[in-house]
Image (cartoon, rainbow, N blue to C red; front, side, top):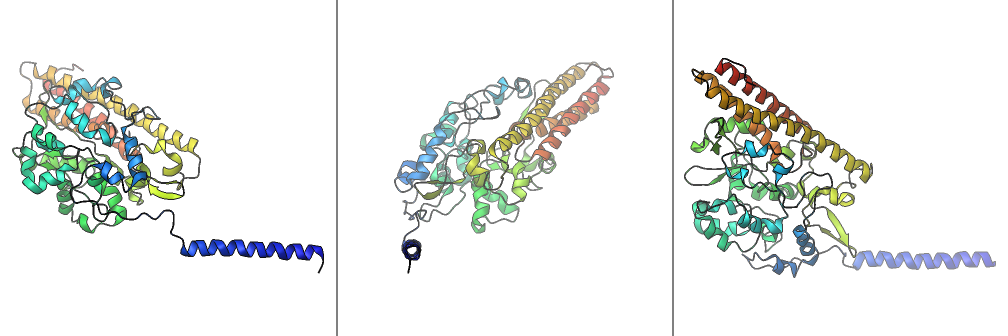
Length: 427
């Protein structure tokens, strides 16, 4: 046996020993990603207690306290008024609290703090406002049923020590995903969906949808209701509201046009569910809470934020075009959506003004004015479904542009109806 042959045999022996060691390690060693389930006491809402057992998740959750502008210039987690970019909002929400304070949303950790400090609440505000802000809603509903929604908000806030956190979405005994918002549970049941039997992948969206959805308050009880009986598309929800559900007529009456108005509330799930990602089976958590690793341990990030801040973890597992291309595509979609949203909002302002001017004309046709008011009501609701939504159209670009296009056309129709009712062209 020559020297070369001896060297090859020695090398082969070393390789066999190494790979044998790796096989044994894989077979008997506990995976670094395995996390032992801890039994958190029932009713424990303090995320710091959960963090003792799940430090990686807790550390990432704490990052929701950070305030930063969006990489594309839309949204972000800095407490600035939306009217800075869209001054037309001051007129569109004239006569109701959103004209006083309509700031960008901050991270989950700030939910209760922002509720306490907003100028939109007052002495008459009701407990329903805690529904999407704190895990305490679970206990409130167990103790009072829907009566908690009609209690004074100050009373409910005093009992709500923690903002949206671990127990909002996880069963403390098993860590399984769950939903605690009774309005979402009832809305899904009405659609034939039992959330307790939902798949884990569905739950990775449901835990977000329980709060990031459109709703209204039932007159008299302030019960939170999702307008989903006819479907989740704009036309479905508007048709639902048109039937005066549960006696609900309006969120407020616009002081200029006297139209009975609707205020949309962050309908992220509705837009997403009909978009490319939603219909393809992608969940909210896939993008906003991606899997990541630290020291070899795989875990779900609980830094609920824009995927643009976590492109490598959120987007590249499915898209291989590169992060620069991905960010450019998002920016393009959002630029186009904002352009049309801004335009539609300005035209809806003109519609309110046209109706106000027409109503002031002696002998104005009342039926014509009623038609104009219905048109501006629908136009603004369609506009608001995008203005109140947090993705600036990205969750469903085609539906976003279509809805805003309809809002723009409806605003023009409202102006024309007002002119016809007045008998002269004023706008």
